[in-house]
Length: 147
Image 1 (spheres, helix red, strand yellow):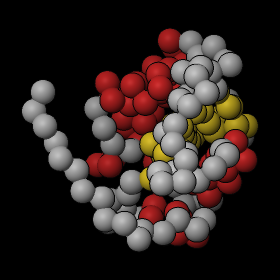
Image 2 (cartoon, helix red, strand yellow):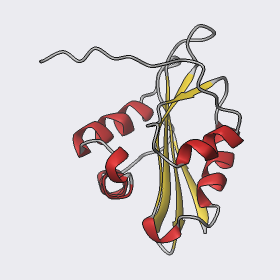
Image 3 (spheres, one colour):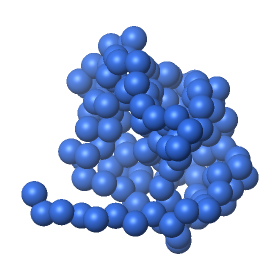
Image 4 (cartoon, helix red, strand yellow):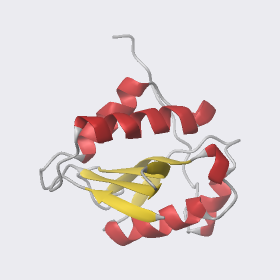
């Protein structure tokens, strides 16, 4: 298995982007988003601007994606974490083998500053996040507006 790192300095092809979108749409299960939203998070990660951008990290074996991380920069510091872990997913057939932990470890090597993430209360991944030091001292509330 090898990790592939993509940032704004890399040329993410349309085919690679589509592979990542499809992977996340399939393997995020009930915690996922529509493909359009996943594609937008990828586009944002590939922005080349000091206070925006981020990166994509994939774990691959023989050109098959086994796991993906999408990390976006928030452009803020201190009062809001500098980064948000938007997506992390492991292929259904590779769960429970430590790949999520390895993706997280590798992602932390590429991330400078604090990191926030959103996790559903019933998502078993929250235990992995806690092992890395993430805590939940805040309750997130959202106002959704019709467009």
